[in-house]
Length: 556
Image (tube, rainbow, N blue to C red):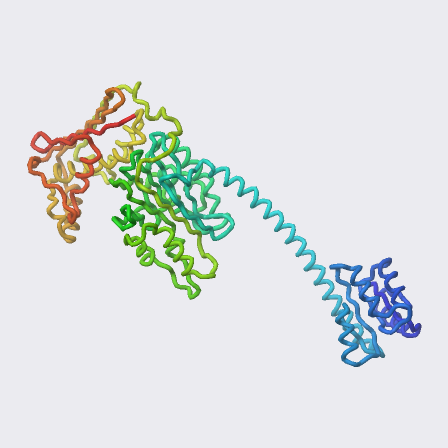
């Protein structure tokens, strides 16, 4: 170690030099403070032993000059002094000294002090290097975040969050949002909305937003059905995300005149449907698994179809709201959230967000928060995308027929999904896929259960009967040895309209369709038939009730 010894007494310098050189150090000598400063700048020693009382420049002034020269670099300065009063010793440390030794110098104490300050100097240099590395890393991270943010902003630029049908609130818990909200216009003039909540938050959670946003916006431009979009996003994320990541999601479509909602929910909080005053009309349960978990053949894509009236509002939100914590660690909860939708406030969004912020106080947000209000009214936006998907002018008429025997009906997988996939490949059909799936599923279920299997809906009037109904269904289906269900689907065009006719003939005994009862609000069955009659231009029964025919109209 190179040590600068500063003392105006030669004997003191020689004694210190002898002690230090005997211990293997290199010694530089200065006779006063001014010379000490000059030699320090020339030789850059590792440690300074500084006398206090000296001519020309004393030790206090020399120490201050050396510390100013060093800036942020640390070189230990140990004062050598015969002074013993507290004021003098305090001054030694206050002007930049790191320690002091009382004269006469004890060699063992001197060696111990040098070793201690050598360790401190080494640790200080190590800390300085690490701090420099961290500073560079921080700057690099900020630059990467800036680049990533630009990429995300560009990827999400096609989304139109601010429309006359939508309002939203977004509050990320970190720089990058693990929640994703996208809104797009369909080629038919309707409106798509998608909300996703990826595992965790911050940049790792936001990574999934890139493939999801691209896949969603492309599908929206093509006028894909909600179920097809959900299936495509699931397939994308199942291949893209690691096994421990997934995305809870809600995908909604409002048709052009604002009279019908199609909704797919997977792993999200239940959606809220209110009337125009903000009063709760219905909770739409999230019944599917989040995106990115199931393989394609396991994925459940069936969507809910809701008939709405002008002014109804759909609310979608991530679990960041009900799981918000107050300073005591208590969650906000679903119960508090739903109280805002009792019709007492015409703007439940504002009151909800204000109350959540007041509830959490100054506590840091523990998760991303996203909320969307979708008002059901005619969509006011320019139609974009590839309108060719709706073109029926050049569509040829076609006919599809399938006969299902008892052996095929016993299979655990319903053929409805495959049938709808096949007919949706025809021009102009894809955007109606969710409606057709609902119609076809209900027609098939009724023909199989009430026709071929001969089950009665009366069993469903009680909870126990409901369970018994499906137990009987399974038993009769597995025991089925004869019976048949014929499915015939035809398509034709007349000017700007396309007509899709779905006919099912079953081998059952039929029923008195002339006196068919419609379901009431309290019934747990029969609502699907009423929905079919709402979706279709006409539904007719014939052949003693063994044939049902539904005609669905496609408008360009």
